[in-house]
Image (cartoon, rainbow, N blue to C red; front, side, top):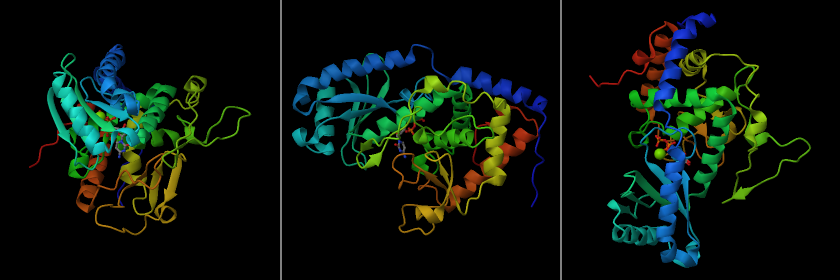
Length: 345
Ligand code: CTP
Ligand code: MG
C-alpha cells in the first residue's frame, strides 16, 4: 500500500496555517451577528405568543446560528418548544404557524407539514434572513449547546471546523439530501479529531465533572444530555499541544485518507475515542435506509448514525476527497487548490 510521507517539520505548515486562518476570518460572522439573530428571534417570539399561549411557546435558535460555526448569511434554524398536549401535533402547529406568519407579512412562507420533520420556511421581513421553524426539536437545542461549548475551549476548534465545513461545501460532500454528510456531522468529526490528538486539544465534556462533583444524568426524551459546560475553566486545556492549524487540517485529512478503519470503527465524540461497529450493533445493516459504511455516533442520540445516508457510491466519493485533500496538503499546495470547487466531468 502506497502512503504519502508524513511531514513533521512545523515550517512546512506555515503557509497553510496562514491561509486557513485567513479563511476563518473571512467566513466567521461579524461580532454583532449573534445578537442580531437573537433580536429577530425575540420579535418572532412576541409575534406568535398570543396565538399559542396555552402551550407556552418558546422559540430557540439551534444549528449554525448558535453553535459558533455559522457562516455570514446562513439560514436560521429555529425550534418551537411547545406543549403539544395543548396545541396539537407538529403537523397542525406547522400549518397554524404558517397562517400566522403570512398574516404578519413574513415573506415566502412555505409549510411542509408532511416532511419527516414538519417545518415552516419563510424569510423574515426586516432582516431578510431565511428561517426554518421545526417543532420540539429539543435534542438539537442541546447538541447545539454542546458544539458551542467545544468551540469556545480552543480557538483551533472553531478554525478547524470552519475550514472543514468550507472544504466539504466546495467539494460537494456536505449535501445530506444527496447522501453525503451534514454540516453537523462534519463538525462532530472535526471536534472528535481534536479530542484524539496527543496531547488532546479538546476534552471529553460528556465525561467531565467539576472537581468533587459526581457525574449527574440529565435526561431529555430518554437521552442523557449531560455535559460539562464551564468552558471558561478549560481555556488552557489544549495549550500543551502546540500543533498549528495547518498541521491539524493536514492531519485530519491524513487520518481519514490513510489511518481510519472504515470497516470496524465508529467515531464517538461522546467517549472521545473510537467504538466498534460490533459493540454498537452496526456491524450488519438491518434496513435499506440506514447505511453503516461510515459510522459516526450522535453524541446524545447514541443509536443514531450521522453517516447513515452515506451509501457505497457516496462512500467512495468521500474517501476519494480525503485522499485528494491529503495529497495536496502534504505536498504544500495552497488551500485554494485543496478547496477548489468541484466540477463534474
Ligand atoms: N442536527 C441533528 N442531527 C442531524 C443533523 C442536524 O441534530 N443528523 C441538528 C443539529 O443541532 C445541528 C442542526 O440540526 O446543529 C443544523 O444542522 P446542519 O444544517 O447540518 O448544521 P448547521 O450547523 O446549521 O450548518 P449550516 O451552516 O451548513 O446550515
Ligand atoms: Mg443550518
